[in-house]
Image (cartoon, rainbow, N blue to C red; front, side, top):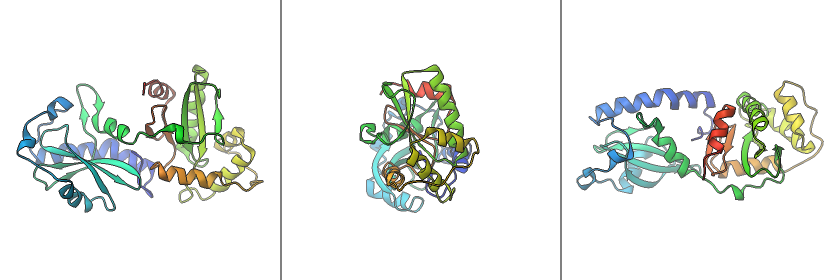
Length: 273
């Protein structure tokens, strides 16, 4: 799930990876919920006695997640909690509500034995998109245009994580000729005020080399054209729920934020839709 607007990627990653799982554990303990994870544990009879309507769920989460809309209410993968699927700014998310309806739990549920992030898997499926609807004619191409596995990356020329991901993508292409990356320039102007002008310079020349020069710390010339491409990328990103960079859209339509190592990229790309 991508960070909300105005939240730095580093803060978001630290919160989701370290702080929130601890909070889930504490909240579950307060609920007296057994921490046995997995979908099989959720197949119980508790919902015969406990009910949560969409209107109740909306009222509960409204205080913690303003401007959100409840889409689904399901039994959670941990006994004693409901899974609430909501949408805010075009992006779907998940929180959990205890059967007491007094605690709102935000964080990931992990199946320790299977080493699976159950919440992450659900979010990936919920936010899956149809990549055929993303125009690629103007995107910068890394790899062979005829490669059967296409990966779309929203990148910011002044984003250090984007620069790291770019290097890892080059490693992927050294190993695999059946993978191609399509780069959409997505400047985060609030964080990087000069990124928009740099992005315009790059798209005017349709130059992957200029993007790599910029990542290497070289100064770029001013843009030589006027183009709607950057603005269209920003609008498209907003529609897709993308608010940070880098954002990777895999062949199965799932969106993953942040940089990934080459081997992890390959493993994720090879997952069948």
